[in-house]
Length: 189
Picture 1: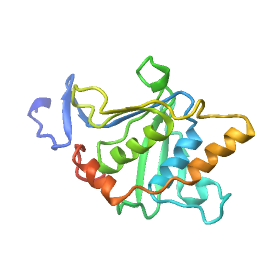
Picture 2: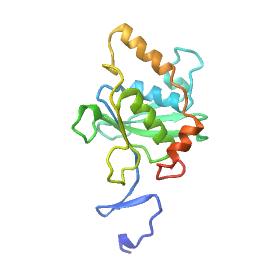
Picture 3: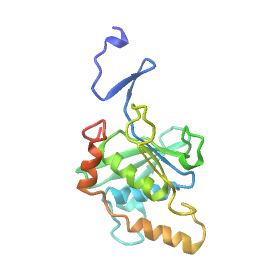
Picture 4: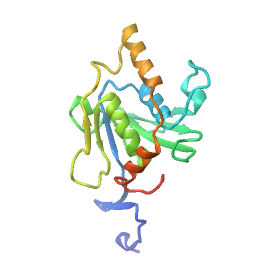
């Protein structure tokens, strides 16, 4: 049977002879540290520590290396704000864009959860969001970083960043509903 004769599910596109899923692309500045991004995503998903200083792995956030050089997976597990019990996303240490304000890349499926999370991530760290990579319109949203550094080493700056992350509220039903209008998928896949 020829490859083009295979019926494909509605969530795939043909690119260069290959079937590919439709992702959203979340670009963050080079100084958006993995552990800060992972904790921020957990808080957006509704995960919370039982004690203030509990490490993220105790409250449902894990980071795994899955054999892809230059990337890791952030996994969120628990009772999440959108009714799911797990979300995962690839965090790439290098995006395909030369601009240092877009140096890190998260490439999840184009769902309401990931679009709403992407909006909040780029507003918090700076960066850009493309809700559906299958369109040619470029970035749907872009924010200048709100602070001089996303990875401060000095105690006052670091404490301010950690406090700001701790104060992040979960995504709301209104945010998820609004993001759904831009999503390629109607639910997590």
